[in-house]
Amino acid sequence: MTARIARTSCLLAVVASMLFASPATANAATTLPGIDVSKWQGTIDWSKVAGAGIRFAIARATKGRTYLDPTFQANVDGARANGIVVGAYHRATPSGGATADIADARAEANHYLDVATPGVGDLIPALDIEETGGLAPADLVVWVKAWVTRVTNVLGVKPMLYASPHFWTVNMGDSTWFADNGYRLWLAHWSVRSPTVPANDWQGRGWTFWQWMHKPGLPGVTTDVDRDRFAGTNPVTARIAQLTAQPGAGGSVTDITGRLACGDGATCASLFDPSAIVTLTAKPDPGAVFLSWGGACAGSSPTCSVTTLGRKTVIATFGYPLTTTVTGPGGGSVSTAPAGITCAGSCSHAFPAGSSVSLTATPDAASEFGAWSGDCTGLDPSVCTVTLDQPRSVTASFTDLGPPSADITTPTSLAGPVRIAFSEPVRHLGADNVVLRTAGGAAVAGSLSCRNEDGATVSCSKDLVLSAQLRPRSPLLAGQSYLVVANPNGVTPAIVDRASNPLPRTAASFRAATVVPEEGPGSSFAWGTRPDARARGGSYLWERRVGASIAFAFSGPSVTLWTVAGPTFGRAKVAIDGRYRTTIDPGSRPPSRHRDGGRCDRR
Image 1 (cartoon, rainbow, N blue to C red):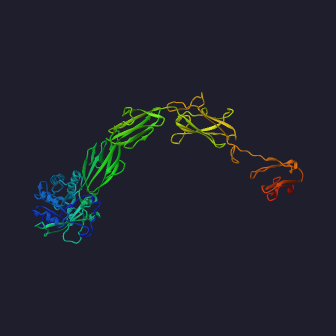
Image 2 (image 1 turned 90 degrees about the vertical axis):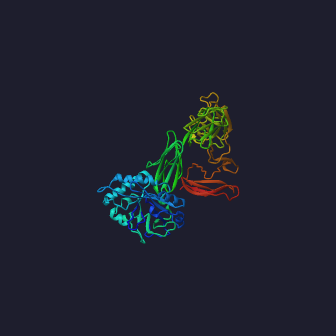
């Protein structure tokens, strides 16, 4: 773009246009002011330009295949030094005659990239297309496509296109291809309140930059100068973005486009469109595992998507698994610092690649530490350190200190179980080595159940057992003497611990309960006989239970019932041949022998 007024300026901007839609009119509250410059503005005092409120400047870098604007570098350096965001444009000079010269378009693109060297934080590249070179609209579109495609492929950023509404509509055939493919528009339309936006309002996205005037009067510039507006208040959405990947040791990071690819601690970076969504994949090396993302990514999934605005960095942390195993006849656990493993069996945890992990072996109360093996050696339970530069495996062995013991708890009711708690896990429990007998030696049948250290039900004969209970199949006899024996002498297999130390014979004797609840297991009831001279026959029957019943057989048409009356006696219902006849209630009468209920007829 030059300072000559008799020209039609057209420049096209191509970028990811996801976040940009221009207002119908541009006002100071919703836009940012800027300028575009070339050699026609001569020497510029950029400090005064910045003081005038200019926020961005787009400088001409190149034209055609070989031309370099002599003021380009000075303009870029001066603007940057005064806090003004800069961009660079290329003035296209299409050629090819009757058909588009694709090689010519690529050569011009390469010349622009060599000179302008757009970088992170700069405004997206721009192509000023205001000459046809004799090409028809369809061929000119082909030429412009070739230029922007070359820049996109090399730089990783889509350029914007500069043009006037008239030039785009007439000479570019009002093409919508660029808008449809995410290239943005730098529109040149002077001295209007609201610009005319070609290509269906740039397919509804509007303009990103608007060159709205060419006039003098800007502090720091002695000539006429193009005035521009950015459709927004934060130019970061039109500045080249950079995404940096920092994979830790043990893996690599790539993006779906292939622009980022690095691993094993190396850092890589690439430029991207502002607002582009980049999908990254973390791939661990053989034997390694992916642990987590950091920086602009988060989470433990190996894939991550980042929206590129400004400078962003993603960090991928990989690790290697550390496996610990506890063996030997004794028992104990292994723990790590940093935390990750606390284990009494076989466990694995992945630590960051290259990290140093210390392990400590802790025996249980019945054991002592034996030795380390695998990636650690030695006899000291607190001296084991491994570096996780590959998968590591460590084994801790423990020695058993002595035989187990058992604590027997006898039943508190006639149907209660015998409970046995062992001092350490044991095995081989069964009906022959956990027995309940009467004082006379007769075996009492029962069912045996077992639990392990975690309280889970396990096999008594096959698994390690920490507690057991033996429940009689039938209620014990009240007041009867019994004997419980764990590991009787001479029984095979014997109850043993992990080191095959046998449980010493352990026994407990007890007397079954003599006071039991009514209707409880082991209790039985019958009508009692109480001598009493007042009763016919010298005695009477009694029963204390509510609902107790008794039946008598008799012959004849009627029966006479005799009871003892008094306040401690309850009521009784009388039925003959299953049919209710009367209720006897002697509870309110003084004790005496009397006839209560009268004569009951059988009818």
